[in-house]
Amino acid sequence: NEEIDRLQHQHREEMEGRIWPRYRNLCYVPMAFGLWLGRLFSLPYHMTFMLGRWCNLLVYAILAYLSIRKLKSGKMIASVITLIPFNIFMASSYSYDPWMTGWFLYGFCCFFGELQQPEKKMSIREWIFMVAAFFIGAGPKLIYIPLMLLVLFLPKEKYASPRKRKIMLAAAACVFLVAGVRMLFLFEY
Image 1 (cartoon, one colour):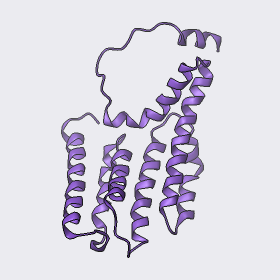
Image 2: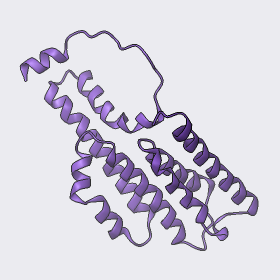
Image 3: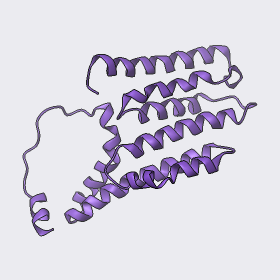
């Protein structure tokens, strides 16, 4: 451990290359924040490493909590999905799987939460959160971006007006196409 700590604190040259973040690397932000925090407080390497894992687990737990709150019924199903032992294991390690699981769970819970309230009109804010959850969740593996098309199946009665419905559906289709084009033609994923 002492040798690893010594190597961690050695001066390193900065890496050259791309400085702006990539969409697919957004999933590593919680873990990177934990590592940054550990280095900020000059923690030993093994504690810094653990802090990165804890931050990943914390983000997963927050997303699970927000997801379950969105539902009026079926909270037990969302809880069971969240607490599957493999999901907890992955959330407490360096992996992008809990990022995808958490954001997709939030998107699905937003969708089903809206379906559980047929008389309530969906606000633009709620719709943006739902689409953003699917978009952010698909970041590490864009092959899952078609799950976002689920928002196209909301009933007409959920929208405040036909004009807003058309705008929201067109926006969802544009987000899907932009992500799909990046996946197919830029080969960055």
